[in-house]
Length: 213
Image (cartoon, rainbow, N blue to C red):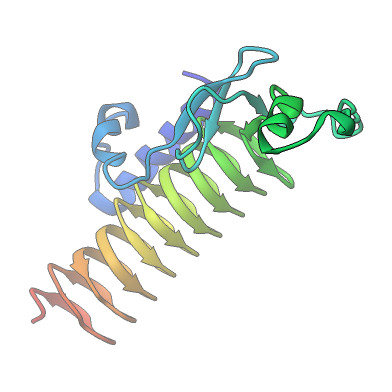
């Protein structure tokens, strides 16, 4: 384990104890399940160093050159192009061929302990996450911000201690989808401002419900 995955495994176990009442084992054993909802990311190789580069999304020209964002020298001037030889679109492409390249491993602001991720800002201890910001202790998530201790989520915003969910402003949730401002809810959909609910659907401002009752 790396320092990142070791810390995330500890947070995973702690979150599982909070939600499920017991340790269910290492996070790595649930990788395929946690990754079911996330968008696939692209994996490439830097033409400069050979290091692994993660991109999100994946629709890029096959065979294109790649460079990691931290390898870009922004002070370096591009090579000059002889404009006198440019007569049409084909000659323009020939003149610049080999110069443009894509970039991945995009991390902005204050970030640390990021692995197999891209398009992040101001985040820490992140694994297999793309397009997120201002978060910490996340694994197998796509899209979101301002979240903590979330695993296997798609569109998780301002949440904490959520597993396999797509939610906004939720605390302590397991297998939730499209739920907002809820806490301690399990296996539910379309809840708003609810607490302590299980197997519930499309409820507002309810507490202690099972199967909507």
